[in-house]
Length: 216
Image (tube, rainbow, N blue to C red; front, side, top):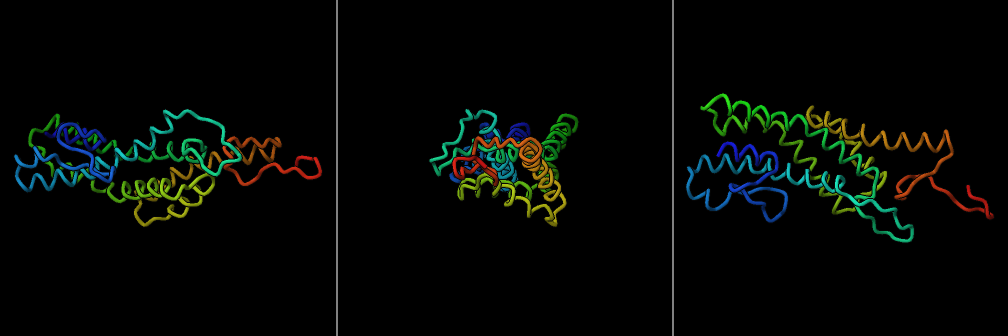
């Protein structure tokens, strides 16, 4: 059961957990819940939340790894979420921001392999410091889907979280902001230094305009 729980923390539900109806969390299966003590069930249910949120975030990241990128249609107000350099860099930032959490799960696995007395309480102690971070990241992704946050609005939306009082959150958000900033700085450099306005997804705040048959 411990090894299955480790996999669940990395977003793989296995036979012990199932995705909840909201698509964000994991729940303990009915079969397992009938055969374990109530205290263990409570601990597994708590750990299942971490695994479900991690799975939700990873699914967002994988959208960009497997994306079939197509240029945006200027006449359309709808955007494919993967057609965005800002969101792609956001996804890359998410991957990097989750490294400390993944390292914590790796520590759990190493402890399980060397210590036969490890309990689920140890699992919780190792990952609970990342609870607020995972909740904030999943809420960011949920809002991106719900409010169709796109282009430079992604940068504006995330930037304000850099000074969060939780140091783990602020550090992770700074990592994500740095990734997004690279996109913005590269684009501004191309625009100002070389006069190149390459904006295939209509995301940036400067564009070409035709005035008296001249493009400016």
